Image (cartoon, rainbow, N blue to C red; front, top):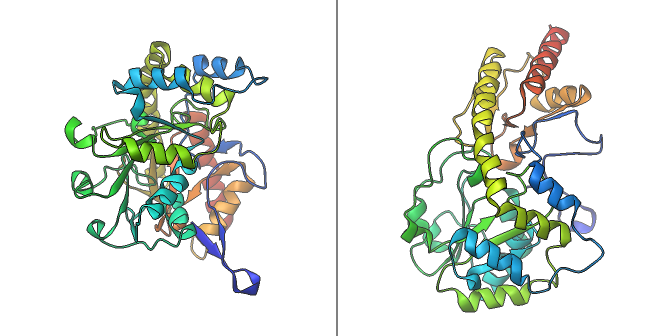
Length: 343
């Protein structure tokens, strides 16, 4: 999240995200973490066939039962959300209603956690023990690494949210939590990334087993029909064996593409950081006198977009979603063009 000054002394916030921008859709978009093998054919077909002429069931009874069966939990623990960002703002509002005075965030994390806290005037503290709302993401964004000391976050009576957006795209390792320890967290799931359907906005949450009154309160804070017909279709497809089989098989391709992409970046002189997910951060070796912003603008002019990680608290680095070899070669060629121009 970046803050921009505004007239009359009132702050304004510029949300920093990857994806299309004022220049349109990038030809090769490394700036998002969407599954490069997608869209998943079965999930895409379900979305295309959704009946947009009718409201979904306002209580989402069938969808919630399907999601509950998929995760092996009671249906009362399943909560629908318009998107991860919508839920982030909603549970922050609930935390304030319940008397929260502070929030804790990972050192480098998705900007909407801090944006929601700032919108509700909830200060960010350095120690989890001082916060009544605590955020975690594993694999994390932007680094794609494991959340350190994850089990300790759930100690005490705080609301602890585990963002699992990239769990389905984990390429190595596993979540370092026992099943029992996981029950203390609110688990936030956003399958659109894993399905390569980020334009479809829908998410869901698995609540802790003993969170019944909080679930009711969160449901009260939600607008009617937070998930539309296309989101319902995507989430229903997500629970099917066919879609899960496609996802599992596709991860082998992503591993190959990731190894190739990291090797290519290193050939370009970039320093790559380790990651367990379908994305990673790197520090480009810039030509003398050129800033990172200038280099990214040059790349954007050649149809290539990377994600500047300054807003994540990592200046001088970029985050790259793993793309297919043709896109990787385009990045390499564009970077060589920039180097030649500068020398």
